[in-house]
Image 1 (cartoon, rainbow, N blue to C red):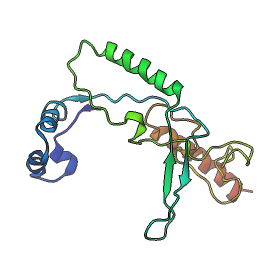
Image 2: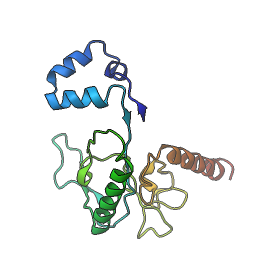
Image 3: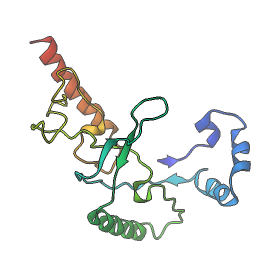
Length: 180
């Protein structure tokens, strides 16, 4: 990420840092002072491979407002556990010469970011939600252009790929729906 700016610039709230620092534990204050002011942030991300048993499902119970919430069914498979161990060993070796503070925020994927692959795509409606043009098989006018069509996470921020694919799908929609 490069140097992280002072928290006041991130929140755009003068005086916020002093209030936040009072609420932090001594250990959190130390991490903030040493890591989040003037330090460099390096985030390590691994590809998350697609497994049919990892999925987004409707919740067993509706929410109090009557809407149908979702639940995530996810588990790390033996392959991910081994790849993660190798990756962390290699990363530790590479960073050995540098002074660092390691913060872990996604052990066992309890913190989700850049969620991908929730709308599998393919040519068979029995095994996929979207066709190769990102159109829902059952709805002619529904196109999904976020990261949910990815077969797996690439192990990096998907923003540029999402944007490029959205442009590809937009060109297709324009051709099919407005120039046919």
